[in-house]
Length: 598
Image 1 (spheres, helix red, strand yellow):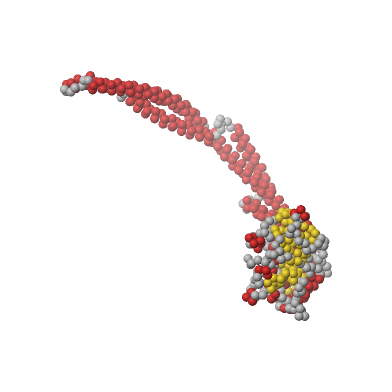
Image 2: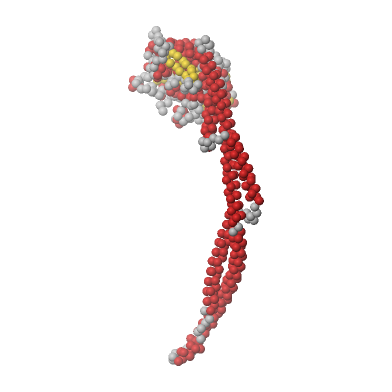
């Protein structure tokens, strides 16, 4: 797998880049004096690596420049042409706007332009993202990284400035060691399944121990013998059955003292309510009788006429007639009122009779109920038996839970012992594996990579380097890369950023050469490759790169002209053919994207 070409649907804003088989140089020229001392220049040499990763189906995330500045790039469609190990080519089409819909087209000739290829001509058109990754994984067929996906270790071959901090743990590996260490061990030639199985066994034991701790906590810290618990449970269950039989032999009519007490309380409440109603009715009846007695008219017009005559006052005529009419009207009203009062009196007396009968019935019922409650011996015996049964059932339930927990605990401990035995066997297998792979007499991929790694560092720095893979005290794989002094001892050189970067470059190149032709990527992208190296080391590294290009490894490197290796025989370090992209700071047309800086 090599890179052949990258282009877009906007040639005027993104000039197509054709990659060579060997060394490919992306050169950024700083032409303006005021930019000479700047750390960053925003020309796009690092951005190219991110763009290649996007075309190789990295996940969409908001921090990526294409989506962070979506207003500038939403109409872009990118095309990456890849050379396959079979000699044919594959073009990957990915839009920014619909970044999760990918298209694929296989073809025989390189340097194609499929910007305007109709939908029906694509082998796969706008396939969903996860399915697209599976399709691409199948087409690339990188057998040397199986069973992992092609993207798992892609970061070793697309190293940007953020990927030089650690030789082995990539920035995208910011996860549990069990996720990435088996992969690294695999590409170094170790049995990764042993390592994966070991991590899985550790996780299994951890989960089992956690469950054991939980159950022990639920048992309250006192763990009884299971046989004793079974015996106690048998006895308690037998006692509970006996108590239930006693209760079943009693005949309590309503059978529940609490319910009986509730009945008494209910009767008392009803009697109280009826008595209150009877009092109100009797008071109303008294008022009705009083009103009936006061309803007769006591005014006599004839007597009033005689009284007025004696006093010499005229009472005859109209005045007498008005009083007589008033008396007649009053008698009519009084008679109607008396009818209403008599009806109300009849209703009150009827209700008082009903209340009296209901009170008599409730009184008898209350007496009978209280008589039942007075049978204290039977009730007390029932209460005592019920309480004992409740206690026994509680004990049975508690013992049952304890028995179940103990059985689970025993099963867990058996599983833990089995898992620990499995882990012990894996430890033995790992020790044999690491001993065999580290043996000097053994020919394997790991030995080849170690020798190549040392050779590269020796050629560049004139110092040896040691690549190590070992087991730590927990039997986890540990990876190391060290620069050695003349006595073969590790130096502190690799701790600096420049030498850390050099170790990363040497590791990547050694990996590629060791796996060349075995279903492994055959390209690498190294950003800022010569930064901070002195002139002699730059020349040495460039010689190594050219040698590895001759082996068939495609290298894409970026650098600023101030980091250029020295000329050779008064000729520039790089030929015009090797420089596939030249950037500069004199305007938008010198950037990777021909547009103002964002």
